[in-house]
Length: 198
Image (tube, rainbow, N blue to C red; front, side, top):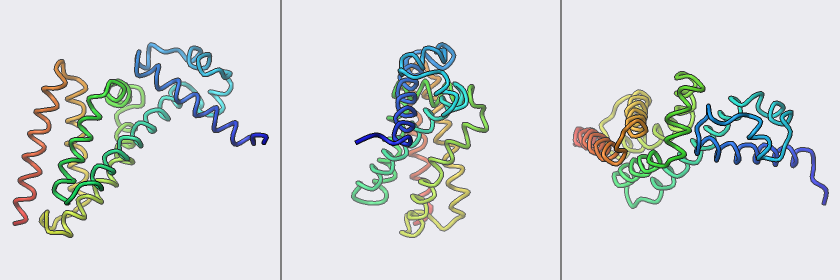
């Protein structure tokens, strides 16, 4: 069966993102020229411009793919948990584990704020993480685990705290130590929030 133009287009885009993701993760955005990406992907430079505008547009697509994956993993961990409190703790663990990955540290936490700008990076983080946090915290309030409060404001503040923890891990000389400290502090904050509802 002949592939449609849409199939070919989707295949080209997927190949560009896959190749760029590997190169960006290994060497960082600045060290990877666009010509190397298109050669490795087996496509023309025109294909890169057609689908993504430029190397920065392709980089944004890579960042968004990573964020979708992390959000899906966090949500899956939350949904699998036996109860709401365990789900919140497990979701945090899964997110902090993701921040330890080399590709996430390099692409999402190091290069993304510099390449895309702080504002755009925060928008992407909010687009993928804020909705999930609002859902989790809303359920926490509905089930009496959290005291009634403006959930969206709480979610925005929680997202800011979690993303600062991610940046601490990315910037740390000893990521394991930074992760443990972030988990301890965020866990203490969570415990205080849940205790306040009792």
